[in-house]
Image 1 (cartoon, rainbow, N blue to C red):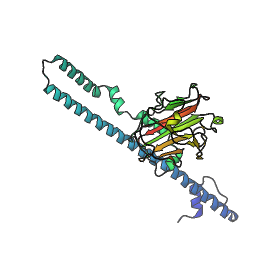
Image 2 (cartoon, one colour):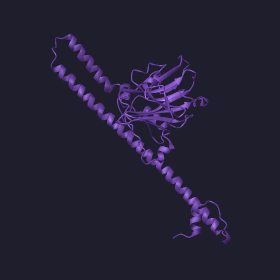
Image 3 (spheres, helix red, strand yellow):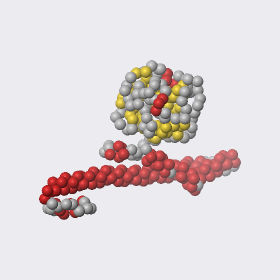
Image 4 (tube, one colour):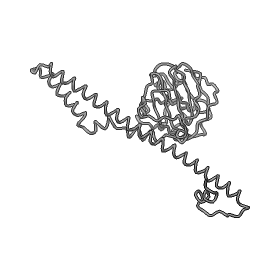
Length: 311
């Protein structure tokens, strides 16, 4: 067992006053330094643990893509070989088609850009890492996976994760995800820039799900949607009526997430906090929708996560 002086010297890089009257003061100080160090070590150990999990997931994702690429190549090679064996050598049209198929097949393993397009995970990994929060790192249940059923991170109208709201429309306007969801989903959007003076009113900014094919109904998109409004309210499903829900009011840098489970129940969360169930049995093909009053423009939103699974 180490004495108090040895423990003090181990954890404190300055000399303590060893007069008897300061014994309790020294003890409290030392205890706090030890506890503080423990907290810091625990905190960064969790970060290191997450780092290792992400690296392993990235390697496993690449391994899966690698094996899938080989399997696909060998499958197509067999198909071409079988066609060659059964093609009349005098049929120039068919032989020309076979040559094209063979050239395309060889290009898939001899062209670096083609291989990169199939196997690269760097862009997706970089994008996902940008949105990991410290709260998630501290959560033992947090799962990071590049192998989830990831959907497109693009808005339909911009072909990009970023959307800067343009000045357009006559009453309301809406922007939808490029991805269409048949059933389960987890979709996160970051508010990069919003005028907080405009978030407290009904219908100014809305986020949720819209029936696939109805995203072109700009002025009454809400009649086809289930949404979470920037003032914390929701709507009566597929209508322009509002319902008080007391969800958080939107602010800059918030991460808004909409979820749908296997039964079609729809939830919302802010900054990966509590999932609040807001709608039941919302089934069918849906897109994520961002609806905005035409009075506003210049606000910026970014898709952070798009997973075709309830997480």
